[in-house]
Amino acid sequence: MALILAVLAATICFDALPGINWPIWTVLASAFLYRNAMKAHPAAARASVLPLALGGVLSAGAAVTADDGEQALILVAVMVLLAVAMRVASGAEVARIGAGSIAAAPVTGAAATVRATWAAANDAAQNGRAREAAPIVRGLVIAGPIVAFLWLLFAQADPHLSAWGSAIVRAIQELSFVPRVLFGAAMFVLVFGAYAYVRKEHAPGAPAMPVFTIALAATERVIVLASVTALLAMFLVLQVPYLFGNPAAAAGSGITYAEWAHRGFGELTFASVIVTTLIVLLDVHAQRGTERGEGMIRTLGLTLVALTFMVVLSAFRRITLYEAAYGYTVMRLWSQAFMAGMAVALALLALEIRGGLDARRLARSVGVAAALALTVLVYWNTDAFIVRRNVAHFAGTPKLDIRYLATQLGENALPALVSARLDLPADQQMRLDRCLAWSRDNRLLKVGAWYEANVRRIAAVRVGGTLDALPPAEAKACLGFD
Image 1 (cartoon, rainbow, N blue to C red):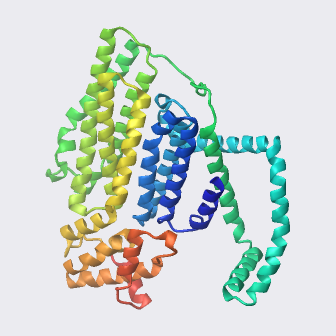
Image 2: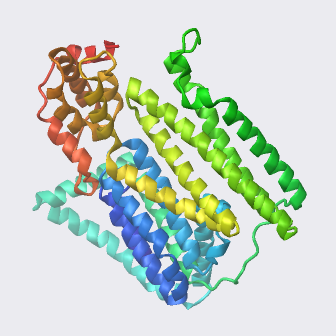
Image 3: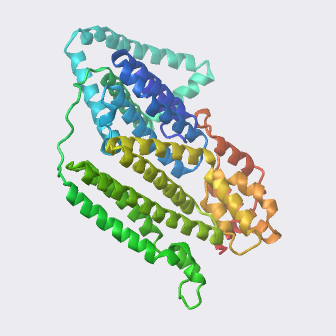
């Protein structure tokens, strides 16, 4: 089955646009990984259903969205989910999988599959299987020249065989098949190794790689948490007018609205990540003390989580107000999604602190939440949302950045742009027509082969075909608009 999947990947995935090819391959690979695991580790196989299912649903997003950035995120997320599923299906304890294991899963998983494939090859060479395979190899060597000679004869009578033969000859001459073959070989090693790995018996509770550890007593943790809590509380109290008001509206403040909305946004978000990580690390490296001391630490931890949530809320409000004044962009919308994710992570952290923090369990919960959030964003079509909101708020005003909407957003936005055209005044319709013509001519919209089928790409191609043709010079004029 590994060979079939490798050939399938080389056929429909290599040098192809993302479409239904990704979910086809991912679902098949996941199904056979589960099947192989069930033969050796039934309980572990059932535990791998969640990451496998998430990977399958997320991979199907490649057949929906036509945005390159979202497709890249899908690829990375699916690789991580499949690697985690392989480790779980092999019998690894779910409780031992934490943030480090999840982040390193693609690298460690790939290394494990290569080792498993190499071990299987050595076993095959040292037993009777190699002798059993010898007749097959000899048969292929003998049949090859005969089939090639007969092909040449039949090609004289059939145009299809002749065309295929010519394509094969050209591919050999140009060596264009080499990258595809190498890609297929790599996929075979990974898939075969993954299936061999989940069938193998692994020692339970294998020790983790040695890492530097430090044990912090309750007193040390209280000092750190109390210091950070005091600093954060003081910052929020002093900055209430700045964080939750609008100092730009105050006469003589010297702060523009744009400066106010932007100032500190990145720093506040980064600080929230640091504080959240600090709480987890202090617990991971804790030397447990008395119940009274641990209770104080839990109280400080929950207080710090609440203050961090206020910082995240402040950053979220800043960018919301900025969007209301200047419009939506992909970066602003995804920044909001990240902050919403931070809020969810803080809520999960608070629950962990109340019940006894387990860093690995928290990492798994946050990982599942992140995968679900990415799935929602992929299927939602953020580009179309940006078009609709910006046109609804800024039609007829200089703040509507037509050039950004038509040239910076991807194919996902094209149908929404065409639909929104009638809501614009005549001068902005003309600008939009020019920008859409330029975007269509420079994106080379195409549907592609059947396995590249993509819902939003097909919709973009269909809508693009309805646009009026414009001279290249007039379409290029779009780039000169402010």
